[in-house]
Length: 158
Image (tube, rainbow, N blue to C red; front, side, top):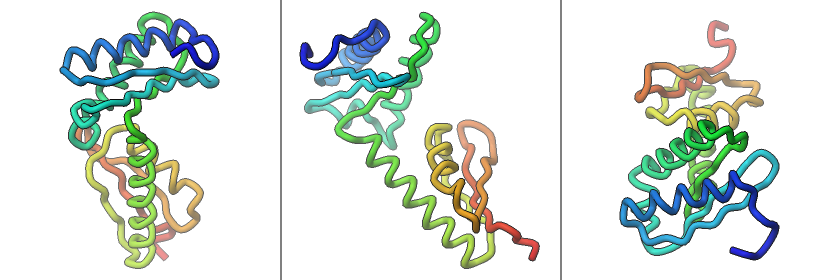
C-alpha cells in the first residue's frame, strides 16, 4: 500500500511475516501495516478472516505472539498487534463488559467472581479496565494455559 508514510523495516517485516503465515494456513487475505509510536499494527482483510482469527481468537493471538517473538529475535523494538476486521476492538469491548459485570456482581454479592481462563493479553485488559474501580480489586490465579482473573470486592473482611 503506497498510500501514507513509508513503512519502517519492522512494519514491513511484520506485514510480510503475517502474509506468509496466512498463505501457509490457506487464508486468502490482504495484509497491511501501520506504524504509530512504538506499535506496529498489522491488519488483515478478506474472505477467510474466520480461519485467521480462529476459535476465541486463538489463531490470531498465536500469529501475533510469533510475530512479536520473531521481531524481538531480529532486534525489533516495536510491539506488533495483529488484527482482522476490527476483531481486537470487539474483543476488548467484550472483555471490558465482562469485567464490569463481574465487578458489579462481586460488589453486590460480596463474593469473589472467577472469570473463565484467558490469555495473558486478555487478563491484562480485564485488570486495566477495573484498576480504577474503588470497589473491587483483581488478581490472576491458576497456571497457564488455564490462568484466570478473580474479581474481589474490596474490604471483604468488613
